[in-house]
Image (cartoon, rainbow, N blue to C red):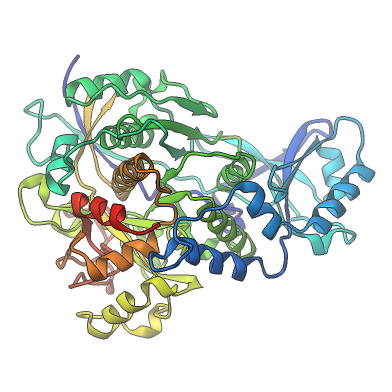
Length: 569
């Protein structure tokens, strides 16, 4: 093998993916009407009981907060469905669709009863939803089918449906940003590899003590991973053989040879989550480029599985203001339900500071534009640091300090500040250095990220060669792997897995020495190379305690593991 041929820096977590966000139509060109007989799938999000959001939050805090007597007492998918499912709504929508049913219609409901998928000829969908489906085209991505006039839910079931997916939402068209140059040595200085991560964060063993443990990677936008590259990576960097066990959805490893950019995110995710957490069943969960709403497809799939992987890593996101309130609210509720089932959702915080990716090439887009779903209060958002790869102190990663990307962070537009972070965020707002004017951001809302991990200059094997990649999308799978290791230790002792981690993380940060406090950095700049990046007027600054660049800090893994094991269940 040619150990290192090129050094390629990928700005990864800024690859964006919208959950039913019609604001993304600008990249799409409308084409012809879809053939009447062509089949298309739409998803009816069936309304839950009216108190679902408040009830789920209360129950989740009870099973996720260490001082609670119900800590670790997670629920099954059937128990969750009985609490939140509205049987009347489900039956009403199913009955209505059955009455409308024509030839070649296929109607399915998920095991949870939360979603109904309808696959039917477009002519039937046009009539049912008062829609007009056209083909829409964009550069370098498959065409999609969308209604050019929106849609309306039939009055007979309107009160029972939150929204219909796959009708008028447009995923944004974004591509990985690549720069390359030849390297002078096979192991470049100032770069990250598995043993360095172990040393920096004091991971004594990467081996899960039990095989009854699982984790998964969410992938989309045509990303593929190569099992051969994974094997090469593990051999080159002294990692125990740890192949991916399950592949859900499309994957074409051959693309890694012809265009490494098509594997940049996926290979990074696979190679590092499996190097950090070994002896853990790993699922590669790929959403087809033909999917109408990739996040929705993923949520629907999880609503159909009784025992999904325990930890999920997501390195994709959208700009929150481009997502509709209905879609964001429902996605958030479903994430809450996953927490009730004992799942941990880990999401990268973005690579363009407070402004987000649209400001990367357009300074007029500067401002405070939080990412979603990183801002979900039921997910653990992970920011990026730099420094240890060069033997220097750990600081917040920023393009202004040579880090290529700038750790995303800030405050949600939609979600109020959860109780578990109230003290930490309030303390920051009282004492933060150079705090931007409060009128520019929602200071009373959910702050993110929650934690941070090194995110600069990762060695990744792509098509047989080794490249360097940077981004919070490197940080997220590494932290997810750490949670999987903690799960393995808990399960080996007969305890429940971590589940929704945030209440415990904030509680432990206040009482135990489990994080490295990152106190240097600013996130006012977007991703880019020296002399080629845009810096906005305002950003947040790192400081003691929680901050909206690195959250609580980077993990002292051995201490964090011991602290979780000591929690009473």
